[in-house]
Amino acid sequence: QVQLVESGGGLVQPGGSLRLSCVASGFTFSGYALSWYRQAPGKQRELVAGITASGISNYAESVKGRFTVSRDNTKNTVNLEMNSLKPEDTAVYYCYVRRGVGNDYWGQGTQVTVSS
Image (cartoon, rainbow, N blue to C red; front, side, top):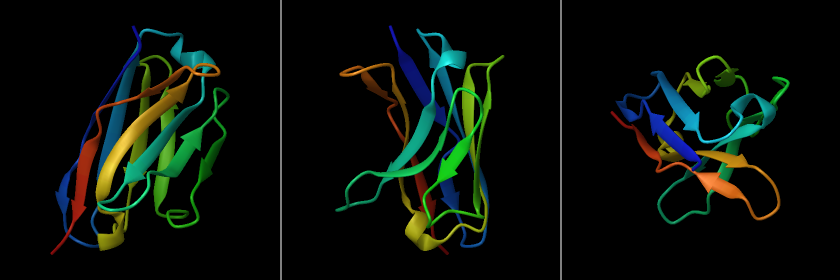
């Protein structure tokens, strides 16, 4: 079955950096776009960044220039490099893949807290 397992979250000071990773299994990883979403307390889940099967990336305006999404098809992994972190980046970050209509999969999430 499809599994997405995130790691790399933690507590970081404003201006700091973190690298999130999502290891996927149960499907042909190289053939699908992957995305990172986040959800802060009391807010809706929002798209942070995505990367297509061919490696084209897109970002939310709020993270452009600070976050970088990448994928390694040899390791079935999608990464999110986060720099210049701000308190408003605090959220649970989720890995996501859509394999078709009605076939949406989410990881369990990893907490990122930006605080001094």
